[in-house]
Image (cartoon, rainbow, N blue to C red):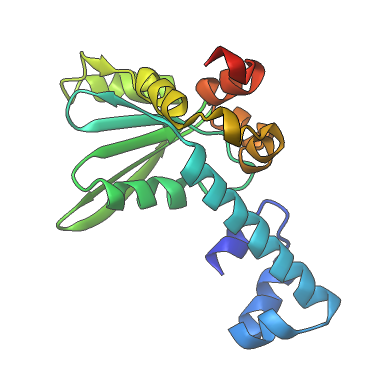
Length: 187
């Protein structure tokens, strides 16, 4: 039910009802209230899935990875924690102009914290870690897209379907946006 609570459109009555029903009934019920709960859960889950795929990290020093994200729902910690488990020992900082989520996964478990804007958080972390050298992975992504391009498989509609503009915008993916705007013959 964590996904239900994360959805910004969830109401108290939805949470109360969700505690009374089991998973099987949630998936099979035809009542409007339960269908609404199922829809809210899927919306939040879908956004988590998209954000995991669209976030691009910048490496600061050896231990800090930072990425931009502006989710519609309250899923910041879920995504930051997921990346922290994927990169144990590294500090994962995800956020935007208003808020940031910081997670780290160590032997003791996972710890996370919510903070001010992404920029302010990175300035604050700079005092604790040697973050002088920023590794920009943009060039790496450009090489990846160029290496994957094949004239015989050109399909702009599929590209737009698999990389929707709203998610590229929420994750500030400049490379993918440029890829869409350029003619594929230019590669």
